[in-house]
Length: 227
Image (cartoon, rainbow, N blue to C red; front, side, top):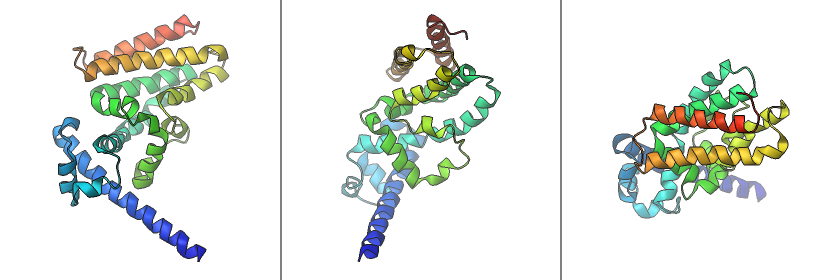
């Protein structure tokens, strides 16, 4: 009896993941072709081969689906990150290398990254990422083990704390300073990303990246860290 129940649950879970995958792939197709603003539940459902009522069996709303579809764009960042960190000689260099890579990708696709880290569903980031990679497990292949805790953080604050902790262990940052430093870094990034999303600046992605790195280094210096 229990074995039958477990098999039934597993089948339902697999079916749910498969259906979610159809809709996520359809949404990504639209984003690739016309941008995130072009998404509509009806068109996504049409491309997936279902009706929009079926879509809402698997996603709370269109924004929820948009969030999941946006997660697919982390793949290029994660792949690039693995190569980018190899030259880092200490935890501070590693931290700045991660941010350099993150800024390069996020400022090139500001609306996508804003949706992931500051959109309405960003508070569910940890669970959503786990769900996403259960649907697309191949995207986790060859990922460095020390990247996974950062990737699976509950939100962007927790993810950044994961990167900062080795700097504490190595004696670069005082324990009592970490929360303030963490918040300052995220506020700098969120501010620049928001301005790009809203068209409030004419910075190129490269200029925004360089400004962010400059301000991040200034934050470290203000806490007595040599960078």
